[in-house]
Length: 188
Picture (cartoon, rainbow, N blue to C red):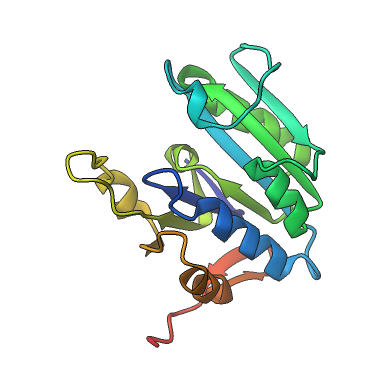
């Protein structure tokens, strides 16, 4: 498994759990001192196309890597740009091509840039500097089995997209030397 401490990885158990809010908060917090790259990765499974925003016009190849340049849309990648990322990319990959897509992306941008990435699936292929899980309490009977990911998480946050909770977590996330690190919680 590849170890990339320059990647801060944010996953979650559902939509609207606070993943993008946390990513944007971290980017905004560090963008004056760091040239952060934003990244969103979605693993496309049959029947999931409606869940990942409007990316119409994209080819249905094994994977696509696109740079986001639109500051005005409400897509997660546009929000990352508005938060201060110097570049933002969107990777859309079929399950069988996920590893190939991320390997190509990393070979093109290098391994030294601080990256804030929204993707739970990427944790299957690499060990990031920090892996945060944003959890939303699911409806009864619709829980996802998240035990595997919770066992790998450095921080689990039950925020429900609460700005105060996201701000407290953002304050604990630091980029030091060439790696993301998580400061201990003050317990307050």
